[in-house]
Length: 137
Image (tube, rainbow, N blue to C red; front, side, top):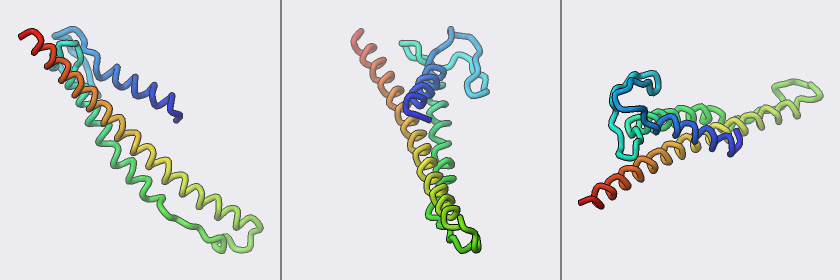
């Protein structure tokens, strides 16, 4: 997945998690029905955002663990016998292993960065709301 695709997915996740429906409406967040979730004064549903952040964060470790299974696997060409392409075949399998490790590591880091970004958005919204409340005192 390219960077622009990651940004689009992140933007979509953020938009789905953050926009608040009219107060009192029933809605579904990750398959769970909620009523009147806490909403900031700006109209963002922080509970939905936290649910999304928590779900994304919970997937990062398992995705990284899949990549750990690829780490450092070297295939000896001798296992393919006297095939003419044994060396090329072994090299391709070794490269597949290395690529799998890199990709799963990158996916884990992406999920962790999305989680961190959602946390930063929530913190900023909280701070902005608090500053707005203080400005009226």
